[in-house]
Length: 529
Image (cartoon, rainbow, N blue to C red; front, side, top):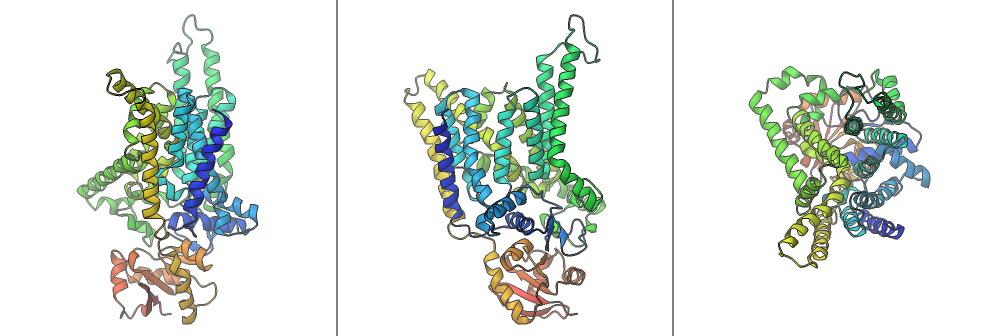
């Protein structure tokens, strides 16, 4: 592969990302709002703190609150880097790094494909699939962890083919950065260590399970020492990258991992992520729902995760060729690691975290695997057409036609998703927050006084006002939150009025919550002193 091929792919990807970004004047949804808000705090010199609370899992004591107690910090750090570089805390500055990562993705994917087949034409097809990314396209220019995961995952599969101490250090560092991007990134550390162990065992089958060198294998001890060294290098690089973050958590929370995450195990619905107080989330309460409900939830999550694998990550027409390519290269260690990662993610996001997995967690985590799938797809297409060619079903020209058709299908799907998902209007209600805040000012809200709202990070970045999330519960829970966090004004959006929140939204004559008016479907209440 020549440099101009990589530059062409990077330029195309940058153009696509900039075109999408043109229709995205702000982050647009809770995750992206959160990472951007964290970047603003870092760039402004406030460190890892946040003037908003979006869940109560860690029993937050007040505002400001230690940041990234649920999501990991890497995306906020990338956003902050763009702001520091430009000297601005604008959204355009915050997403510079993410557009750069989107531009790198097809370069890494093409290099990965070339390492499999040593053919420029197939590598360019893989790179084109990473330019026109289908369902991922709307999310690459925004401040989220899709771009970091795509690039880090692709680099990990590239380095995995290499041997020696530098490769082990790189693998440990990449696993560390994946962990800083998402908490499930630690899975990659386990997979890297397992891959190293498998490689050494395959290369030196004379090792004895008892640990004793068998006859005529005087080098077994040195091989074992070499493997121990590689493992130590991986772990050292991993801790070098993640150690400061783990130290911060221990200093702030008294534990290496941020508190509250274990409560996610006992959710009975996704909306219970916002339950207050979160101490209600217990094993006994979870078990009380009954095994039919528990099993049904996980079967539903499995269905959504498999559909996600085929439709979103496999882009419908690409998926079958990924499977063929994976089978053709099944003896390659990278394919084994990728398939193991997919299986592990599917199990975790189905059995352990079914609500988070079905609501986007699996889609997020699977981004690390996309460069491998895009690299394998043209290889699988080549195997498929080659088998048909042997039966004289196609002429030699069919290879070129089908490659073009595969890329064309990716272009069509990407364009359709952008037109339907991005162009008509980006965001989940954040655009109306400044208007709501002006109304609150007219009603007498004090400067710096927090409000209760569906998307606290979004409210903060659009208005500069602290905010806490509307708890999933009845009026009593909302009053308890208001009094604990001094958030006297409650904003309930029609789109977020689900479950017990809906009864509060509809009851405009309640004596416990004073109804003040409605703006564009959002009802404003005040909690009396």
